[in-house]
Amino acid sequence: MSSLSINIEDVFEFATQDQVFGLEPIIDQNLKALHAGTGKGNNYIGWLSLPSSIGEDSLQSIGKVADDLRAKSEVVVVVGIGGSYLGAKAVIDALNHSFANQLPTGNPMVVFAGHNICEEYHSELLELLDNKSYSIIVISKSGTTTEPAIAFRLLKQHLELKVGKEEASSRIVAITDSSKGALRQLATQEGYRTFTIPHDVGGRYSVLTPVGLLPIAVAGFDIKKLVAGAADAEMATGVDTPFDKNPACLYAAARNALYSSGYKVEIMVNYTPKLHFLTEWWKQLYGESEGKENKGIFPAGVDFTTDLHSLGQYIQEGERMIFETVISVQNSRRKLDIPYNSDNLDELNYIAGKRLSDVNRMAQLGTTLAHLDGKVPIINLEIPEISEYWLGYLIYFFEKACAISGYTLGVNPFDQPGVEAYKKNMFALLGKKGYEEQGKLLRKILGEEN
Ligand code: PA5
Image (cartoon, rainbow, N blue to C red; front, side, top):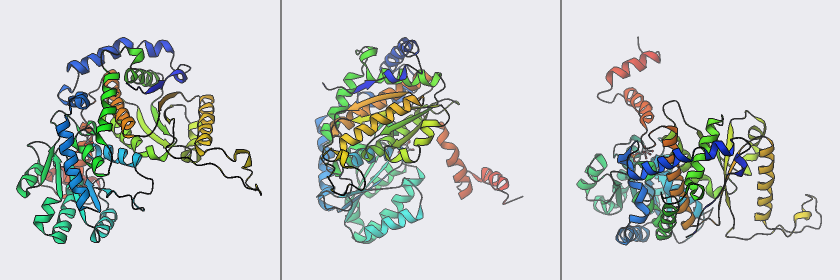
């Protein structure tokens, strides 16, 4: 079994070994409570055993629908927001050719909608789809989220006008709750193919269900390998793995010890833009899981070396409340050497013949040393390569560590009560039935009504 490498040595100057390892009893207890189903939010822990329990049959039926969509579509539009969007986006972006949407790759172009309410974005998407054969995967656990519902209404109308109602229905796949919500009702009424999101798996923990697996398979990637990586992470982070060998426990302990020492912001760092959306997924996972009851580490992200030229200054010398978690990738899948140039006007001949990945590694080393010097604690994670296996591994590892971390902080890592606040105001301002009183109050606050 392969294992993720985690190194927390660069934490001990800022949160002592005693602080970190002093958390062992509570973290062990929380890991056991998670597995025993006795912790907070225990009706949402179905994701814990997903990798080891997902059957060959389920993977095959996802693969079959993916093949069908691939065969009939130049573009597949994935509609969803939050946990119903970011996991698939993270994996597809990490594995895809960086210019996949501009190059013929043999795979359908996978695009996303319903993760914003931007008029221009959705108008331009419909413009793109005017001249493409396309299918839609619509994902919503609740089946009632406004952003994807609006996007789906637009897309459904567009597709039906383009290919007719019957053909459109055969090109739409809905992923939602087994019985609840408007999307389930619509799917039954229109005869869409459907996949179910297990009732005990919350949105941001759902990548390893059809929510993530179907779009990833449609994009041409091997979901069996992804699940195999997650299954190994499930083993490696289980109750039988001792604290000091369990990467999820070590990560949870290091970040909680740092939080107690005043480090309130965690920046996820990568040195390849391919992991940009993995960070976005991680931000949602940790932000929604931990940020409640006036507590929680603020999850942020940077892509280095790009952001060394924007946020680098702050990280080096700004307020000392930041720690970094760096994901390193040992091997690049492609090779590119820096060319020799006889003029040497850019004075780069001293690195001529070196691989870009070697230069990137030195940039990383130099940054690590500078940031430690600037009193930024660093947790180091390393994977051998960006692949389905390692992305599956990381996804499960982060989910597990998030749940343990949330318990250690004393919160329920599986709910998101704070997300309702903006929705209620939006509904009230839009005049939704049942929100009339709040609407009046808000308009008064906004000075639109006496
Ligand atoms: O993690 C969560 O539960 C949320 O981020 C949801 O995934 C997000 O709000 C989308 O919800 P739904 O799938 O019900 O449309």
